[in-house]
Structure formats: structure tokens, C-alpha cells
Length: 116
Image 1: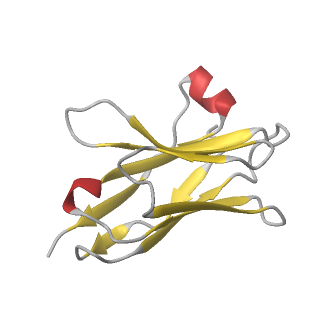
Image 2: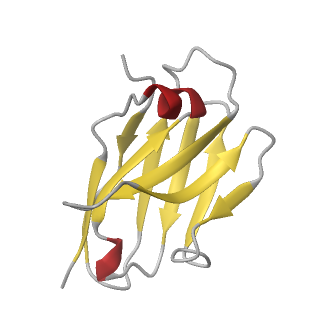
Image 3: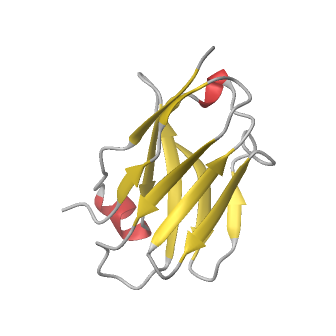
């Protein structure tokens, strides 16, 4: 059982915005961080953004200034706000906890397509 569920992807034009959600309510561990990753066909999954257990955020250089993480603690959701989207942001986006990452347990992801 995968403890996280991604949602919010879709088709958007270049320059547009999307907000992805990662529902962590199925996670039995105390929250100790979460990462967003993305993958395109034929490529390795790459890190996009992460939030630590104490609330510090970090971002891949390619998304700095455009993507923002936030956390709804009451509802166990971590959001990835994506602004000024570019074609190269198109990918399947995944979220994962440190535990899930180490176990190699991934959800289905959510598809983001940036195209005019």
C-alpha cells in the first residue's frame, strides 16, 4: 500500500499554473518530510522540490522562483504550486515520503502537460 496519493495534474498552456496535491493521510509515520519528483519517458525520475520535517523547503534549480511548496497540516496534504509553467515541465509528477522513497514504493503520479 502506497501511503501517498498525488492529484491535480492536467493540461495547461505555457505560462499557466497548476497546483498539485499530495495526500499523506495514509502515512502511518510521523511526518518527517516529503519530496516531489517528476519523470518523463525514457528518463530517470528527478527531484523537483522537498519539504523537511521542520518545514524547510528546497527546490531544484530548474523550478526555483516558479514552484512553491506548502503544507496543510490539518488535512495532511502537501501542495506544489507551479507557476509560469514551461513545456519542459511536462512530466508525471510523484510525491513520496522518505520511507516510501527508500522502499521504492511509488504511487501512480499525476500527469502534467504543458502545451499550446
